Length: 482
Ligand code: NAD
Image (cartoon, rainbow, N blue to C red; front, side, top):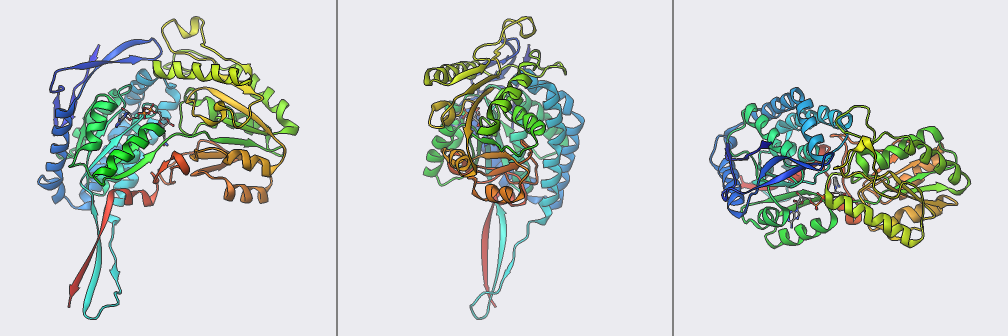
């Protein structure tokens, strides 16, 4: 079995108490790696290392161009090691190898892009309304930034945070999910190899209610960038407020995916399928509420069912597999519980509706059948609460106004998608949908160039894109008497 160490202050270390915990392979249900179980002492060490690197090490002496160069070098190393990192993520979280390999090959772009931005952070000269006063602004790093991430895309979610944080001159402590820590620890080897000074990037591993909380409370941490569930996000926001930490929160969703009767149906079918079943439904942007115009509802749902029925379940490391396991045992139980809730609420299960079995899925993995419910009303729990699994809730609507009302009738607002050929409707709908990202005639497109974040309970702030570097900067106004 693989045994990992944490990366603190440029050293590879065991947890201070020597404890470890198992990381399981969701396809086999068996442990495959041992991960250090960090505690408060380890958090203190990591934050101290990051604080020293920020204040006294070679890092603050580097020019912004030097930082950019290091980030681009890191991007190259990720590209060279993309397949290895993808295999580790698949072993840890059960996502399909094709998808993870694609994702890992794209991740270097974050390091290239923000590396390129490092030497373009500029202040301004202010034409101030005071006599004999010269006023300019500087954009300065915050200090020690912490990235706390979910288990579904560990290195992608880290890239959203780490690349802009380092480009801006901060130092960083990463806390990956306890379910998928291995790839972040492997990634730290590449950071070391790229030549970043010791303490600029640190990884502590362990449980959220232990080290996650310790990081959120720590007085020397300036910023928490979090991706995870609404409840944890709310808790982090409350705790971080006590010490006035800057916070960005990327949380859950219950995204509406709307199909109008004038849509290009073949494309819409593919979009809806990938919107909900990719990564076994475990994506924050999953189009988990399917709203279909009543005139085409039954025919469209039949097409979706036919498509989903044929999906090949199995080992996520095999390229032919289309449905992998759910990542964690608690998630597996939660999905099955929600399927029970939907049945209890009176929704009709037209596909799946339980654990998947058979020789192709083995006997230890956490497989759930792709599941589709019709006859769902938007007030049902299955339409309001995030399942984070391969469960689609179908709701018919009559016209655009009704589609909008249903789509926006949720506490979430991460993403929304719709399919139509009517350009005027495109403009109307994209203005009125309450979501941080709106896809039209496409779904699940993510780019380092485009802001990602939530309306309403789906979060605070935006990651990615030019402006996201501001998440890691603070502005100083300097006034000089002339
Ligand atoms: P989670 O909230 O359980 O855990 C996320 C991280 O928070 C983990 O690293 C965990 O250890 C840590 N954590 C847990 N308790 C903590 C505490 N008290 N203090 C500090 N840290 C703590 O979420 P999850 O189950 O890992 O991920 C699934 C959720 O993530 C879903 O809701 C999904 O929608 C969301 N997500 C959002 C995005 C986005 O970009 N908006 C992307 C991916 C996932």
